[in-house]
Image (cartoon, rainbow, N blue to C red):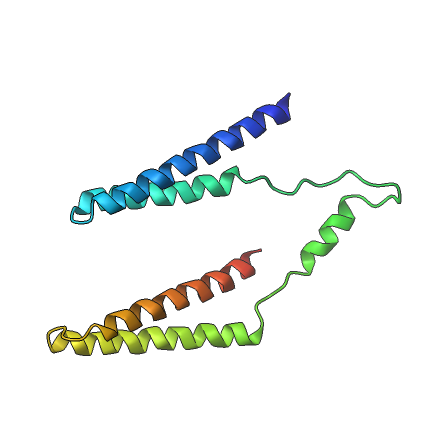
Length: 143
């Protein structure tokens, strides 16, 4: 009975998260020129991500098996976390340097009146790569 209500709560939270994600996406699209609507849409998207995170089930520990191994066998694997390798760290540092360089290039273009579109695309691409690489690094460090 208890696990059934827990499953229903998780399902309800996931459905609420999906609704908030759709609501936030529509509000972002419709409120392109309104700061208040975009701000509320951003809050909806953040709350949606939080609700998805708390609604996902976690691995349950087992009581044991026929060989006598119990919880200790499951926690032994927890100490062998896979850490980011040296090339991933190198890509992360290079991506930070690319964001800095593209930001400077964007600043130089701003001084001359924003006549080129290339600095904007370079900055956006570098920021996206940097966000993806560093989210992987931080996520793998927190596991």
